Amino acid sequence: MDTQSTGEQNHLRAVASPPQPSSRADALRCALRPLSEIKPNLTCNYLIKGWLDRGAFSVVFGESNVGKSFFALDLALHIASRSKWYGHRVSGSSDDVPNPLPVIYIAGEGGRGIGNRIEAMRRERPKLIASSDTEFLLLPTSLDLCGPTDADALIQVCTNLANKPALIVIDTLARSMGNGDENTAKDMGRFIANCDRLRERLGCHVMVIHHCGKDASKGARGSSSLIAAVDTELRLTRVDGVVNVEQSKQRDMVANRTFSYRLRDVQLGVDTDGDPVTSAVIEQADPVVKQTKLSGASLIAMQALDDALAHHGERKSSDVFPASRKVVSVERWREYCDRHSLSNGERTSAKRTAFGRAEDKLRTSEMIRIVDNFVWRVIE
Image (tube, rainbow, N blue to C red; front, side, top):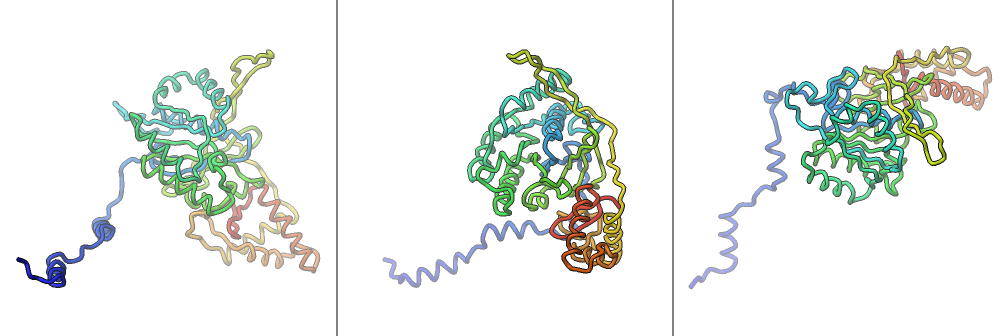
C-alpha cells in the first residue's frame, strides 16, 4: 500500500516535471535570427511589377467621378488574365504554364453600374475578358469590415474555392464600413485589421477604392491611419479630361511611376425609352500637367516655405510622410510668412487671415501637402 503523503507525491511530481516554457515563448525564441543569417529577398513577388506586390495592401483614391472603379476594374482584369498591363509585367504573364491569379471584386454599391462596366470591357477588350473568364469573380454586395463576422465569412468562402484569390478589390471603403465611421481612428483600425486578416489568411493583395475629401491635396478622406497602414497609395487626379495616376506612396519601391488615361464612352444599347445606355473603358493617354503660376501672396508664402524648409526641414520616418521630401511644421512656416511680410496688417488676426488664404490656395492648386500639422512641397 502506498503510504506517501499527498505533499510528498506533489514534490516528486514537481521534480520529475519542471515547468515548461510557454508555446509563445518557444515561437519567439525560434524566430530570432542573427545578422549573419539575414539575406536579401531577390524573388519576384509582384502582381504588377513596379505597381502592386503580392500580399500587400493598397488604396486607390481620388475625387468623385474621376474613374476610380474603371481604373481598378481594368487592373483587376489584367491580373486575372495574366496579361501585361500597358507594358508592365503581370505575375505569370511570361510563364509557359502560369499559375492562376483569381480576383474577387467586391462591388459594394451593387446595381447595374458594375455590370455595365464589365459589358463595356467585354465589347472593347474581348480577349482580356475571355482569358480572365474563370478567374474573375464578382461579389455585388456590401460587406461590414468593421464588424466581427464578414471578414471571416469571406475567408471561409475563398478557402473553399479551387484557388485562393491573388487580389481582392473592395469598392468602396465607405460601403464596407458598416456602421463604422471612417473619420475615427478606432473604426478605421477595425477596418484595417480585417483587411490584414484577409491578406494574412489568404495570402492575397487587398486593394481599397476610396474617396478624397473636398480638398484633394489633403489625401484620402477620413482617418490618416489608413494611409499609414497601406503599402501602396495611388492618387488619381484629373486635368483637362486626362486622369493622372500617381504613386504617392510605395513602402518597398521607389514611388516615381505614373500612368495617365482617358475614359472613352462605349454604347451598350438603348433603354425602354429608346435612350442610349453607355459605360466606359480606360485608354492610356499622355499625361497632362496642371500649370500653376504663383503670384502675390501665394508666391510670398511659397518663398517663405522654401526658407523654412532650408533652415528647419527634416525627413520624418512615419509612413504618412514622403521619404523623398523634407517637411516642416505649419507653425514654423507661419513664422517665416510673418518674416516675409505676407500680410500688410500688423494685427495678429490680419496675419492669420492672410496665411490661411495663401495656405488654402497652395493646397487646392496641389503645390503643397499638409498632414498632422506638417507641410511639404509636392514638387521640389
